[in-house]
Image (tube, rainbow, N blue to C red):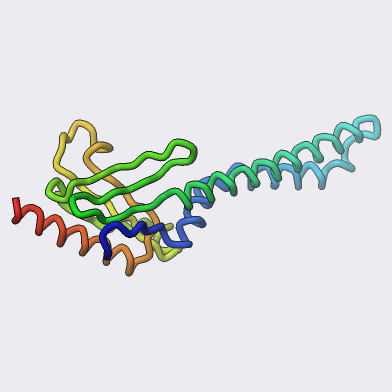
Length: 170
């Protein structure tokens, strides 16, 4: 893989990110459907309130779904990585972009993890383990989510080759 070229996650990453956020809009759509179905079962004097509850729940579901689609798209577009000469750089964030750099000689291992959901979507997670403290595992590993299986293997091989080259060279 080329040094300095910015790579993005695969297109399946969008669906993986969306799947983790879609539960509440789906619940609101289901609730709206139930309210619509049973609105005629309420007494006549409460019918305007039943209609109002159905409409508000439906609009809230649509608004929440649109918000989740925008949020997911921003996460998908802003999650990038690149190989530099001395470090592997991962960028993520919505409004404030966070950029993490892993110096190659600090890489202990590069694992490929596939949960059942990952396997269903045909993606893999790369877990980069670094030298550091065991007290804070979040600071001693970086996770690159939702890469295709082939691309994950390429990234793993490239990271291990560069880590090997930098550990021998130092």
